[in-house]
Image (tube, rainbow, N blue to C red; front, side, top):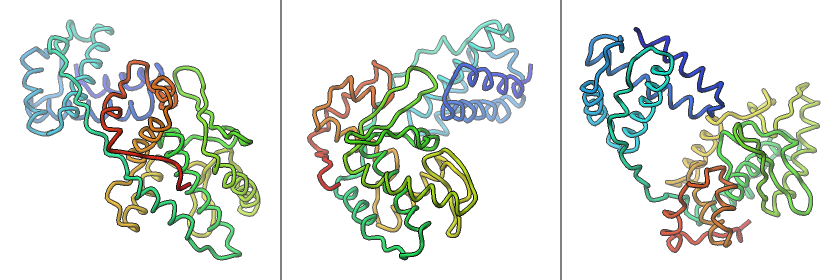
Length: 307
């Protein structure tokens, strides 16, 4: 039995089960690694006779290629799930990967963007000079500020921001953002009071620019070149590049959506939000541990005062 088609079937099955896009991408990456092992070491791609000895050999293959314990652990976990799928469909008789004990997940120390650097980014946004008549330039500036606020004050992930729609923002005296996870019930996260002062002019200007550029979309954000709006929505990759550009321009070492989100968690902790509330806002399971953040909170004294 050759593996190519079964990997494809497995990914399709996980998508039907509601796995997130990032999870599906990781599954594909991990199983491609396993395929490379079969070709490089076993010199074939037939898994009909896969045995326990091959699992151990694959473990050594991973050790030689990945320094991170978590990287190796994730690839073994994916292989375990994949072989469960193969057993379920009578493609192999036994899941030998399950004979290997799961190594404990290593909780790395959070590396948030320092508060001073967050302040620097916000100051940069406020001091950007835009040409009075260039409404697209103004719109991009407002867009980037709103993206920053959604990550630092609401803890949103790039995958969540990329698919947000205008209707998902509840403006008013206490603005909130609605989140619709693929699994579980919708929930909302409070936004900082400064959000409205940016969102209201942004929404108005976005509507007029859509008319001007003869384009229509319901997404909150957009992709544009220097001359016009190209499309609605902004990809996770586009968001990563936005902060990469800021990181280079402002000479900041740690500035990614992930590091800013970590800063948000410390901010929530210092605001004395309950652990259950923070887990809800992060969209994680009840058994997710915030212990590493609690342990390091005195080293990361975050606030929202600069906003």
